[in-house]
Length: 72
Image (cartoon, rainbow, N blue to C red; front, side):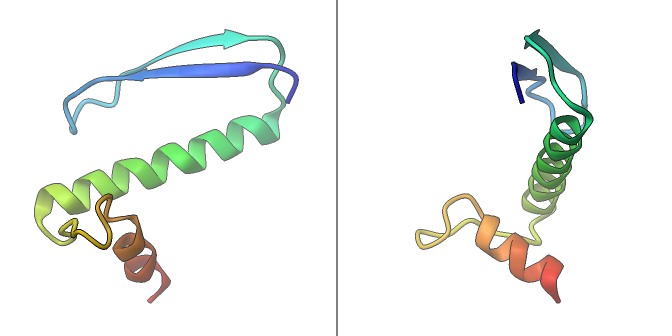
């Protein structure tokens, strides 16, 4: 990666609009990694909204439960 990308997300969980600001050059592998992170974040937020994952003091973001859920 010889550049950077900044994202601004909509606050609505069902609204996938993302504003991007790019600086420099990004390679296709960079974009694939970014997409994977965004996809994981969207799925995590949906699982929290549906109550399937409940953040706890030990796992305040719910990401630990998310990884266990998707590894099974």
